[in-house]
Image (cartoon, rainbow over all chains, first blue to last red; front, side, top):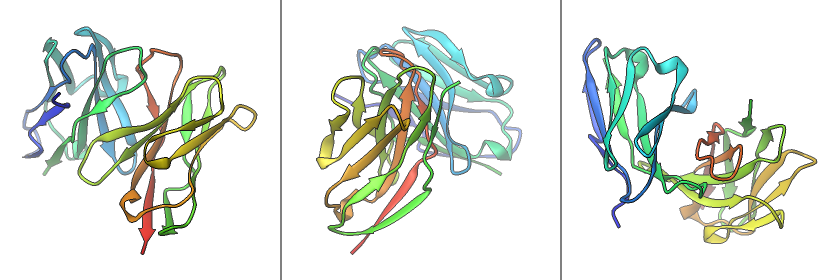
Length: 113
Length: 114
């Protein structure tokens, strides 16, 4: 089975641009998560979907971050407008639900100039 | 609110030596605990998890962890490390079984000296 696929692996954006990161979860998984990973803050939960329904939309990230799950096999994370402090690795993870085990993608590294 | 603390940002040990990575948690009830590992340029992978029962749990690659309710700890251990164990290790918890919303610690970067 294919694991979690994230694209692009690397993205460089100018301040103020809109970027869209994509994630394909493991086939059959019901839960999908977006995390932001930085050296200083570690892993921060951005969004959590269960069966395509948004369960949590990380409070501090609401204004410029929007995650969507258009179908069970595809999710996007839009950052609009980008700021230099958004430079980080964005990780997508999926889970069957009720297992406690998340399967992570390799991440999308975003650099905002 | 729950939290996870990994007091050591970096740990260096010699190949073949034993290892302990520390993890403390804060949660009013008994949490569900995990250790994940992240190799360079990869996502996180589950090493082991604890839900209930025997406080010592076995994981992949000969890792094990011991849950202590009295100390609010879930330390990761390995009897003899290999150079390939170099990675970042994350302790994590969720509030109940099936709650996939997991809180992660800051991570401990493990370096193995030859």
